[in-house]
Structure formats: C-alpha cells, structure tokens
Amino acid sequence: MMNKDLSYCIVLSSEQLSYLAGSKYGIDRMKILNRLIEATVLEQTEYSKKGFATTLQVGQAALSEVELSCKLGYDKKTISRVIDKMNRLVLSHPFRATARAFTR
Image 1 (cartoon, rainbow, N blue to C red):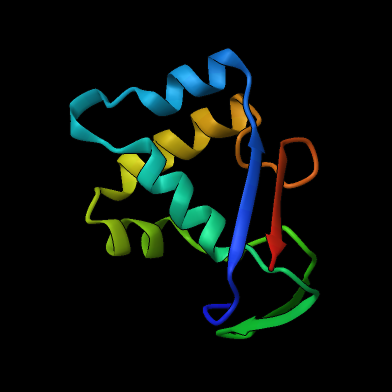
Image 2 (image 1 turned 90 degrees about the vertical axis):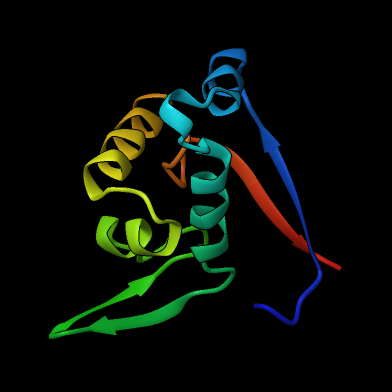
C-alpha cells in the first residue's frame, strides 16, 4: 500500500467536520482519523494475530486502541473516547461513512 499514490474522497457532515476540526485538550482528531484511514485495506486481506484470524474486507482495518495509542502517543482511554465519538458520528464505520481511496 505504501507504494501506491492514493487520493481520498471523504464526504463529511457539518457535525463531523466540526468534531474533527476541534482539538480538545491538545488531541488532534484528524491525526487519529488519518491513522485509521492508513490502516484500512484496499483489497481483501487475510489477517492473523495471536491465535486470531479473519479476513479483512475492503475498507476495514485491524488496529487495537492500544496500538493506536502507542503509535500516536495518546492515552488508551483518550483513544477509546475519540473512537466512541467517531462511531456515534459514523466516522469510523466502513459501510455507513462515505470514504473511498483511489489509486492513480
């Protein structure tokens, strides 16, 4: 995926945009969304980790809150709250949010 030149088209409601543009307590919500987008697969992918295996479909990601907090340097509880809010705003659900990646 790193070798491909990707363009993203993301359609946001005004409520979603306002949430992402905000930065309460220095938490960069766009940085979190960016990491989630980067983790999504562009084609069906076999995934396994510590006795768990599944097939990720296009637009899905396998990234734990612990992994996300370590990569971004935020507390796990903070990541959990942001993800919960994103889910309520339908920002991180692959089938309901309108987000697509295009390769060039």
